[in-house]
Length: 444
Image 1: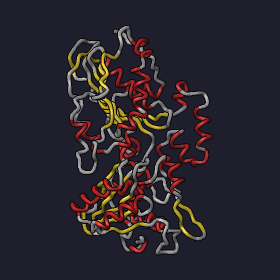
Image 2 (image 1 turned 60 degrees about the vertical axis):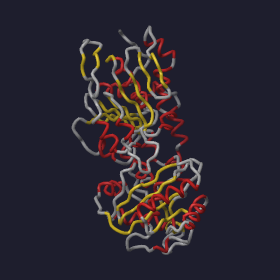
Image 3 (image 1 turned 90 degrees about the vertical axis):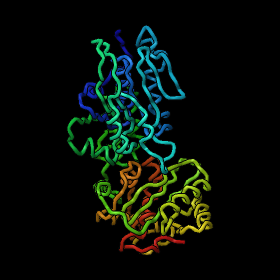
Image 4 (image 1 turned 45 degrees about the horizontal axis):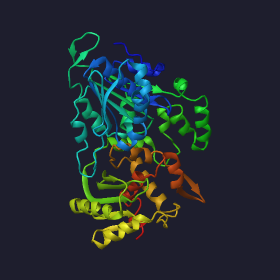
């Protein structure tokens, strides 16, 4: 049965739909039609094979509901779309509790977030292990750990389906289709920096998708983002992946890429760096270093200080750190006090305090510069975590009255859209590491 959906792909979306490669990234500008491409490719593959199964995901469920779900509503669940697409309704059943949509031909789209409910000690692959699908669609791929993407490749194709054109039972092609804005990390290395077999990158731009946007969309963005800097415009309006490298930043992208690739042995000391938040939009992040190898051991949000103290206590009992460096401004002071009362080796980090070295404006600048030196010399290993790398890669610095100053958190929040919680935790955990600066850059 012929299905004529309302979706009409632009030239670059069409190239992505027709690509034969197993791995395709459609990435670039905001407003480039990335989510529309993913959702409609998933729909068409469900209609080309009876009883097909595909998965459409973001890393976090909350982000999926705010973004990708809106595209699914627009292109699939809206009754107008169903009436235009087929004399029958395209959707036979929508199970909102278990997050799947079944078509009239028995095909299904599974959707939602793939991040486990707890990332402290849980298996990050647990959610994806349960899916029996023939294609995965990842929206904002840079949010996903590389391990999850690699494992997804082992899960496709998984089920036989009937080809509606030939009537034969077959395995549909096992595909991994992704979309993303430009960002540092493993996705850039995989699709942009290398020419790997069976991989294809197609750049999404606003101009190619202009027919699906308001006539003033690009002009409005350029006006609103005029103060963000040329790199921001190139990255999110022009979709230029090379623009994620900003040489005005305190930490350079090549150093971060090298730190991810480094293989540093685990040694003493074991230390924690903890950035604290409660019920706002900020993250609670705890990093651990064993010598010069760092990892993220706590990554959560929206909880009170007692819950944070309990989790950090559990981690401290397991790893026995010699120091737990806590951001002790605001909510962090309560966490510091409770951990101290329980007998843990806490050290209060006061970012606005007086630095050991008078070349720096404050302790915060000194700690960031210390991390810069370690990264520049290639001495440390960082986890391949997109938020951490992106935060570290956009923080700028300047000289104020002959001292080095890191740009304010308000400016960083304006650039990132959120607080640099991962970056701050990283500077805490490496504060005092190496020989160039001493532990007095943190105050009690």
